[in-house]
Amino acid sequence: MARLAQVATARQAQLNDGRRLGFAQFGAPDGAPVVAFHDLWGNRNSRHPDDSILARLGIRLIGVDRPGYGMSTRKQDRSLMDVVDDVMLLSKALNLDRFAVLGFSAGGPFALACAYRFPQIVTRCAVVAPLPPLDHAQGFRALHPFYGRLFQLAGGNESFFRLLMRGFFWFDRQRKADQHIRELGGLLSSADQTVLSNINLFNSRRDTWEEIRRGGSDNLVDELVTLTKPWGFRLQSIQIPVDIWWGESDLFCAPGVGERMAEMIPNAQFRLEPGAGHFMLYSHWQSILQRFVAS
Image (cartoon, rainbow, N blue to C red; front, side):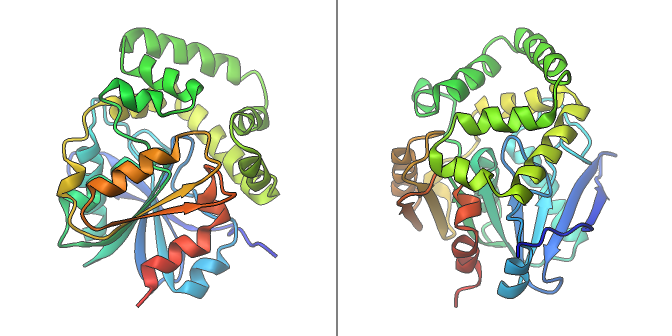
């Protein structure tokens, strides 16, 4: 039976500028460390519901709240590299000499940025259906129309977009968080809806959304705006091994994006999984993690 930890080691790290960085650890305490970057609707707890998989593989998963999410202090006008620098400070506080990184969806760019910036420390990178660069029109067109438009608005008139999102958050607070998760799932493939039918995963995603909306819309807007800015590095400059995972039935972003990214990264492998959707992080959790501990 799937086991979702009821109590996790969740703490905050004090950063040099006075902000706090929230994180949580799961799996084998002395296992191979993997720092995880959550998706747009995620947080430090985002993972497969069955924590025994982590323990069995000998992986210590460290989920990190990006600024404004969960237990992390907001940082306005942040960039990908700002977040990566926060994670590096956290790794030092945790005495991690070397670690791998995992990024899902909107967390993908942050994982890739970490791989680029610290090739002597990051051992391996895996990204699952990562968001493509959105500093040009082609990136928006690769996304599901709803998300493409959402990011376009974030990258346009920011003041107007903040007002728009405040209105949405007011409306959303009038209903149960379950409805929001169901609506997002309805935008995706039947494979993704099957994944979300796992009650433990559904409840985890619901609880995460409740935490996000308690934090307020400006934090989410910060994230959306950050992801529309230039990344600050070229994919061709990433030196470490990168696994790019994609579901053949992914409706959030076209698999062709992953193929092009793999062609640009010197030491990348593209893995297209038949029958999988955008949420293949959960449906293929063990296969993805095994790459981190393979000899």
